[in-house]
Image (cartoon, rainbow over all chains, first blue to last red; front, side):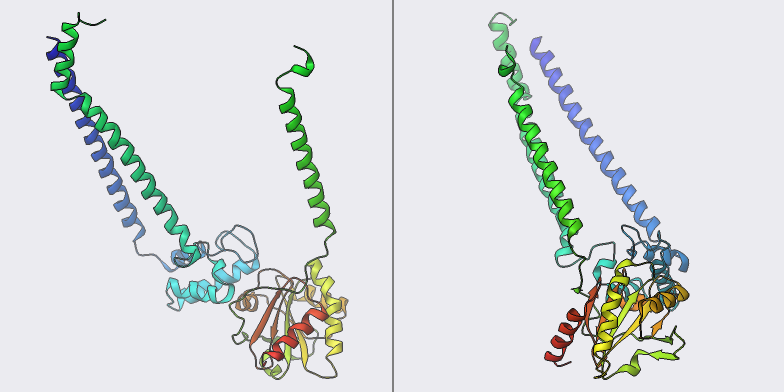
Length: 171
Length: 190
C-alpha cells in the first residue's frame, strides 16, 4: 500500500513538472507575441513631424546637461531641431541627419551609443552577461533537476518503502 | 563590563577616524578646486579640425559693413564664440585685444567674434565694453554655432590662412596660447 501511495506521489510530481513546463511555454509565447506586437507598432509609417521628433529625441542638447534637443528649449537645441526639420523636409534619411550632426559635434552628440569601437561594448556586454547568466542558471537548474529525478524514480521509491516497512515502518 | 571592555567601542573609534579622514579630504579638495586658476587654452577634439572652416558671413555689429570669413584667406583667424552673460568671455577679452594689437602690424592674424546664445545688441554692447577692435557678427538662429559644433562659450577655432580649421579651444584663450598654436600650425605647413 505504501509503495502504491509513493508511486502516486511520484506520478503527481511528474504531472506538476509537466504543468511547470506548460507554464514556461505559455510565458515564452506571451513574450514572443509581445515582442512581435512591439515591432509592429514601431514599424508604422511616421509623419515628417514624428520623424523630426524621433530623431530629436536621440540627439543630445549641445549646451545643456542630460537633455535631448527634443526636451530642451535652449537656443542651440532649437537650432539643431530646426536643422533636423530642414534636412528631413529635404528628404535626408535619419542616418544622414545624424551623420551631419556627428560631423559637427562628434559622436557624443548622439544619446544612443555607436555600434562599433569602444562604444559598441555598451550593446555587446549586456548580451554577453545575459548569455553567461542564462548558462549558469541552466546548469544550476539542470543539476538540481537531475538530483530530484533520481529521487523520484518509482523503482527506487518502492525499494525505500519496502525497506522502511521491513525496518518497522519508520518513525 | 567596564567602559574600556565594551565590544562596540574600537569599531566606533575606527568609524569616527574614517569619517574624520573623509571630511578632511573633502575640505582639501574644495580648497584646491576653489583656488585653481580657470582653465585656459584647453584644446579639444572637433570633427572640423583639418577640414574647411564653415562659412561665416553677415553684417558687423559695430556698423563696419559686411563680414565674410572667406575674404580673410591668407591670414590666421581666431573665430571666437562669446556671450555677454559669460564671465570667462570677459576674462579672455583683454587677451584677444592684446593678440589683435600684436598682430596688427604684420596683418597675419585677426579675430572674428560670433555672438552665441545672446541678443545682437547685448553682444555688441559687450564687445564695445571690452575694447574689442574686431568685427562681431550675430547668430540669431544659432546656425553658425551649429556649423562649428559649439557647446558653450567661450569657444574659439583657429582657422589657418588656407581656410582649414587647425584647432578648437574650449574656455578662455591667452595671447601666449594662441601664439603657440600659430607657431605649431606654421611648423606643420599652414
